[in-house]
Amino acid sequence: MDVQVSNLKTTPGRGRPAAAEREDRRGPRSSPVSRARATVARYFQALNTLDLETLSEIVSPELIHDLDSVERRLGREAFLAYLAARAREYREHVFDIQVMVNAEGTRAAAEFTLLGFPLAEGPEEEIGDPQTYRISGGLFFQLDQGCILRVSQHAPPPRTRAL
Image (cartoon, helix red, strand yellow):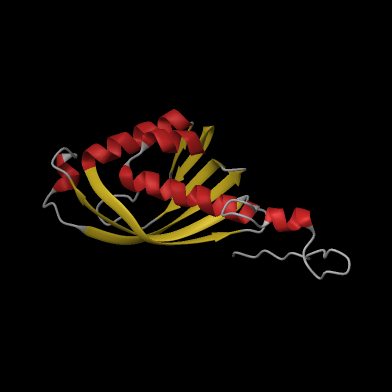
């Protein structure tokens, strides 16, 4: 839930927020909530374009990637290798993304729709008749100042898993 409550201090006699608080509210990345939202937005943009360089910049070297509470990958390199392998087997695009962030900007959740189809390079037993699939899913993030420490992914598998 995106809850951010702030008690604004005012400059005496002016009824305006104090200069330090005005400065904190400037720009899209000024608050912890805004920074977390921007990081999650970069994550999804990089996923959709398979921009492994950007993903490498925003995920921790010690990233924990939990996949449907069944599988766990530890480390940035294992995560990027997983995404690269997945891109050889499936073409996927995430859209209709709704992001919720806690007030501290340390936790975020995203609900999304995944549209995809298997590619010819994928495993024979999973490809079958290459048909488009569309599923709803969710990701939960643990963040620290613009760095993703953990991603927990939950989505019902059509014939495959989500991102």
